[in-house]
Length: 422
Image 1: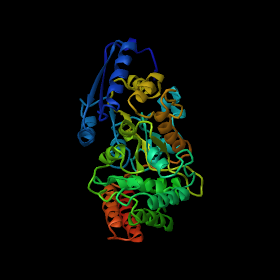
Image 2: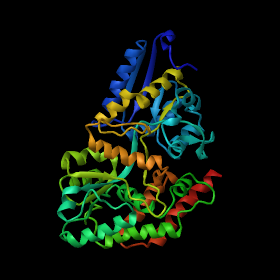
Image 3: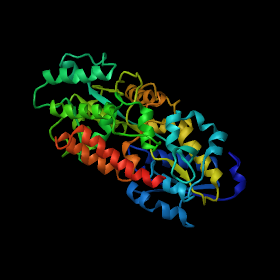
Image 4: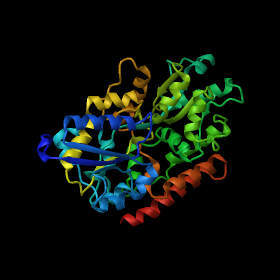
């Protein structure tokens, strides 16, 4: 294995597939960094191809198994994609590269776990490392500070506990006109409430318990009194009128746009929409992670962007690893990511000093990540879990099912899939 001196290899072409085709987003970052890499190694040509996430993930197992697939590709954490790539021997373990380049400092142990699989693709969260990722993604609370101030609250003295935040919602509802929501939210696709629930769940359930459940650690269950309590809390946010009435009719990104126009005091959603909100509210926005429950651990839904994998058939895997090291860990990479309103996943990332908003978004990510508080994405727990969660959250908020029955339904989905891992 080598980490430099690639000029002696002669002409090298790296074919790279990505679904990060957004601007603002990572597409311009990847293009610029790939051009920089080829300037450093003139014999290396980067063939960077962008596809939709659905198109890429649908074809990647077949492409990697063929003789003309990519050398590097993004995958997707969880059983549907990464587990299958590992099981079929289509990608390489990266432990030797992690040691050679010092990648161990990039992420916390909990974050590293999302890239680990046993060789049979059944053991999630343990075994070798098969991927690394560029950006950190977590669900935050966004605050319209002008609205909050106008209602008589100090944006610089936000609650430091979930109990305090829950009480603030009630206090705001009592002061706000009835036709205005406390929280603007969008759930048309079904993931809005999955994401928002994570922050509530974190106040009642230890993040490790949630990760164990997603990773099918024996004995794990979602059907617990703590989860039922969290579900009841979310349900109460609906019955108490905290949410916009059209949340099931509006897409999640569109709800961020509505919040950016001044609708709602809070918006709860992913940091990938941070730029949308800043464009609308300017200096009148504050970003914060969910305040912790009694444990004091800052936690919530989140993980990283899609994992990068090196094909088992790559002719020059050492060059591919060097490209990964550069586009994730280099100062140039982090500067370009921040320039595109993306938050680098590496723990040492520091935003430009003249970007206080990005500092807040970074702090929210790093607070959760450094506390080992990332609860991952609940739908990773089974190939059908997304639909199970989405449909049950809709029924819960419509009063068509109880918190206890929803917890049992989610666990039944988990148990059915769990039997296939034995």
